[in-house]
Length: 532
Image 1 (cartoon, one colour):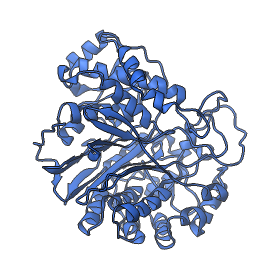
Image 2 (cartoon, helix red, strand yellow):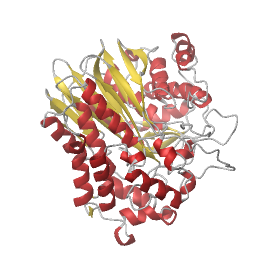
Image 3 (cartoon, helix red, strand yellow):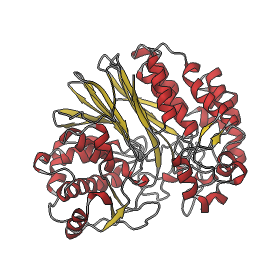
Image 4 (tube, helix red, strand yellow):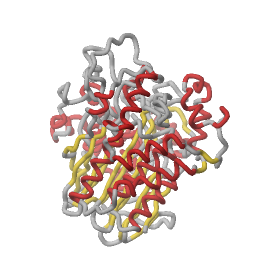
């Protein structure tokens, strides 16, 4: 992998870098590194800050995922997925996307932070205290911060639905009005919840006084989740899945995440010589889209909680299967695509330090604003990940007591000779593997610097919030000739504005042994990457 690092807008450092979709969170993460903290500690602080400053995409009432690489070559994933209630629910019809009926899984973000802090101390030389890592988030919640354009955009976008989300109006709209960009937002109830976790430890969210308040708030809201369900919530530490790519290996989380889907896409693309295909050409977009389709067909057939269903990861990522899927890609013809699209919103953050540790992380409350329901007076907006379950008894993702739902989140890492070289991830549900295919090929195959790779036009196959057609969306700055040629090959095309908020908010870190750390966050977001 040879990357051209020419853009002056990139964050660069020989000491460490951090990136996130919100400037204040990134600054807090950099301060952790400046104080001698490691990448894991910086990620915890950024994740906590984002739970305050990006409440439309993440929060304490959601899930989280981390890939952690330590300086000794060890790598592990934390899969923080809340589970369905232990009670056998009687559900029929269609699972609601919002409201108490969507509050069907517990929240594992806080446990993910807590277990990551333990890993930091055990494997990464971490010395910073738990409470110190949460202090910046507590202060932001208590003292307030300027509302971002992204937060305002998603309040505007959901203005017709706000009557069904009273907690969003109560917590984030002073006087019932959508705040102006830059207007100060304070969250005293959330500050108190964060302070309780900082004082009493991360399990306070599940088994302590705060956990009792959360359980009471869930019951009062009408969720079937109980205190016992909270107490049973644990993020899982696992070895990552991997697939070879261009002399290195790509790493991802195990099911029920769609990490295997991103790996399958990249494994299919590895069968093609991209040096013969111009980046940004019709051939380029066509190949990526067709690889996405092949992997999505497998994902939709198999992906679920492996505790409850058989998920043949080894088969799907085997050389024989990847060869067969690559052979099905037709250069001049698009595969018909009338399949449903999964929605979802997320935040990506990453950190790499001078000690050799690196973290790639995603946090989510599923849809923007999650369930739209807060729990009691905690200031915690609960996610609606339970809406991702199926009610079809024959479907592998059918809801069951204690089961984890299918998850779109899959932060990633690229290693060469056992060392991290790229950290990457994005917001966007079904769009995540699609965005990552574009970002990774641009970084690895075409040697683009992180900022250039993130700025380039992207595609999105399937429906969006604003366009219910199962078409191939492409940002308009790809060019009219590209649209015309893709249409000729059978793609049903729809334009997205250049730098569209619907095209995902990825971040990327390049770790170059000779030149140091380079990082960027998507210019479509409110974020920034910073180096020491």
